[in-house]
Image (cartoon, one colour):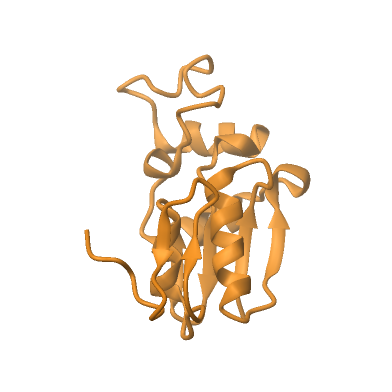
Length: 140
């Protein structure tokens, strides 16, 4: 089973969802901006992905700065409470599979969570190659 905490307005999130589907999975898609988060859900996801509220905080294109969440002395508890009030503050996409939980940025990070990969070439929305014709990640 594959679960993706997804924002359809985010290119990285769309790329990750595309990779998952191209690999043959029918993921459970949780649009967290519509559904919101619970404290226990976030704490469990962060623990499983080895994240803290501070490392999972979305700082660009979010109200993080305006809310004072970038201050050095801000606590994880304060960030967590802000994430519950403003779901957009959680960086995404977060993917859960039997292989683990990960914040998949860049999008090809999701491959480490998949038991099977897409076959053949696969590209991001911007044209960057994710997998070559042999179904392998290109060498940088």
